[in-house]
Length: 58
Image (cartoon, rainbow, N blue to C red; front, side, top):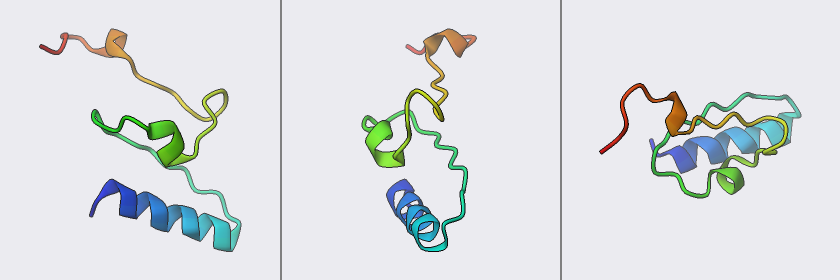
């Protein structure tokens, strides 16, 4: 299943049931992750940048 379908179904469930669900997104290629996950970058997002990698990507 694609990430988009999974997130869309989860967000629809949150909107219809008014229950909170935590989404953990893992992708190296998702450029618009803030819009896609509907997350507040100030509270609710932890971004792992290149400083967390033990070996740099080449």
